[in-house]
Length: 121
Image (cartoon, rainbow, N blue to C red; front, side):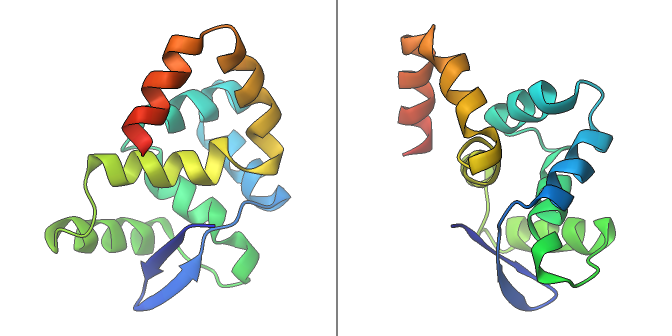
């Protein structure tokens, strides 16, 4: 699983049911929109991905906390666009909850899967 530093603490990013429910509320298209935006490395969705993936910690991280941690990581050159894509995809597309959907979506488009894999490696 991926890790992310927020409020000075390195935390494991792990999607739970609470995180899935949270993400479905922040996107208009539900699960399909979440997966699509994660695949694209959507910068607006990314802080929400972080918050959703931290719900398992029991700590009450805010969107402001996530955005500040992202800003710090970008400023310190520890996070770039590909890093956002990788983290988003690892948390969303590779999570147990979304993985079957992702596999089915990519099964019909082998070239897209190959291109995405190449970008994320």
